[in-house]
Image (tube, rainbow, N blue to C red; front, side, top):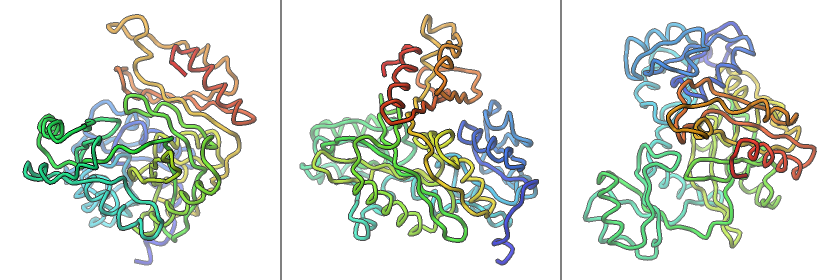
Length: 394
């Protein structure tokens, strides 16, 4: 439709499904550019809904709520991949520009579909998924290739931040683990000789323009992102080019409009393996808020509003430190206490971002700090100093 190619100008409403921190940072970026935001989320306490011009508290599949959103918003996106595809389809049927579309989001909702797609993508990019085997029924376990042990059993749906997965070393352990995960469809992935992890952030506009950010090198603890450092200290230039070219090919192949993150493993032998796709801005891309010309959230606004994409150039080396709810319970698990942000901000290159969550919990993402530096070593030193200030192991 011709009208779907016209830009959506500031002053209009943009919609976001999901009211968490990614929705909040999107809302802040949209408001800074002159847009109003409507958030739809089932929870009463919503970090994004608390600052948006309009907050609809309803289930994602509530037709009345979706019609209200469609009446208000010219364009809608999602802040997390587990929004039901039918909600995106219904909004599109009501004439809303949905970016990304449900077919793209569905791909990341199911690890089986995701692994199958990544396997077909390998012929184009020479990067594929880790060797894996699908287990949907108990009878499948007996046919598991033994060369996949030790492996990681992951539920096909709803797994994130290390949830829904278990390491197994044998068929017997696999049988037990599958039962403990609820006997739901799963993927067993071979555990690879990992050297380090990276992620590529790419953006595609409605006009097929594609831009990529510098690749970040990530460290996880207990399955949750701990730090992201850019430029990636261990990555060779040829590896970075291969990863970025592959991510650009992927975003075009699935006809995706918006911000997309692809996570990769770099193995000790130098090979690169695709881990998973996240159809949204990503925790590892938060560094762009202070270290790049355009943040990932500004790009999300631009893509949704059918505007030209922004520059992804990095202005300073950076190391991003994730802040979990554990920090609020340094003295006692019963009485949360606000961390000493004044000590953190005594480091002038530290940029604090808190997510407006009133209820800190152990392991809950509460914010992040971008630690900048004139060079990579300085950025990493600043990050280590800030972590030490907070009592976090650097």
